[in-house]
Amino acid sequence: RYADSLRVYRDVLANWPGSKSAIIARRGIVLSLIELGDAEGADAEAAALLADYEGADGVVGAALKMADEFRKKKLYESARRLYEYAAAKRSDSKQAIVLQRKVVTTNIDLGDEDGVSAAMEALRVGFADDKQLAGQVYEVGEHYRNRKEYAHARDVYQSVIEDWPGTAKAMWSGQRFILMDIDETEDPNHPTLAVPPKIMQAIDDLIVDYNGLPELTRAVFYLGEEYYLRVRSREGELLRDTHRYDNAIRILEIVMNEVAYEKTYTPFACYLCAYC
Image 1 (cartoon, rainbow, N blue to C red):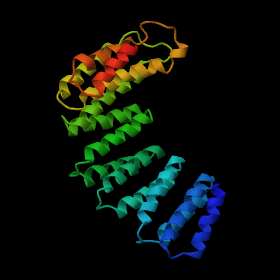
Image 2 (cartoon, rainbow, N blue to C red; image 1 turned 135 degrees about the vertical axis):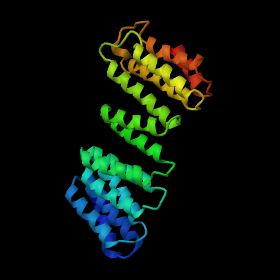
Image 3 (cartoon, helix red, strand yellow; image 1 turned 60 degrees about the vertical axis):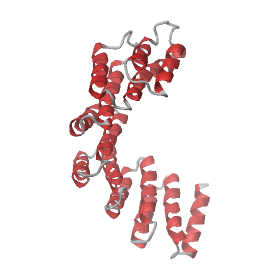
Image 4 (spheres, one colour; image 1 turned 30 degrees about the vertical axis):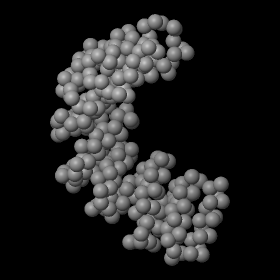
């Protein structure tokens, strides 16, 4: 069907080259070529779109859509060029900080450490007064964590904790440290019989440091849920051991008894404990 779409888009472009529909058609050509596996052709068409319709309404939006699709297909060089283009064109918009963060994370995907450093510096310096900065730096940490590049993730999360102390993003950064510790501690073939003392201490510290933040209960709940889901995903392979959910229960009991009541996550913790 992408071949059919490509023919239609090319027909629109040929017959109405100066219309608003032409930009949409050119974008459609790029997306179709990506899906058809013609990365080189898609890259050339994307460059032609930017050159032929420079300054026209809808070009930056098209660039972002194309960048996202290139990235989904792991065509990171093409994605980076388009994110950089969009970030430059929308440098004065509320969206600019998000676009710059995408430049950072695309450099991460490329393994370009120099590019990451330069883009991160541009993010921190260029948006130093932006209220969104803590959240965007945190998202860089999330990107590293999702790639299981934990050393880099910890560096970024630590910077959030130090630069925005006492905030929700600092609290979530601390929670992410614990999630990574859980992942590094738990052997899926040999689950721990008790929550390691280091992790329990980290949870206690998280509660002390961020007591009073509305999102704390949810953050602690997710830690208990992490243990629950690890067992749940393999329940058919595990013996019906009455202790198999003990780690999840231990943390969910903290949610029920040691942090502030929250209308969604406190009852949910009770439910999971009852299931366990």
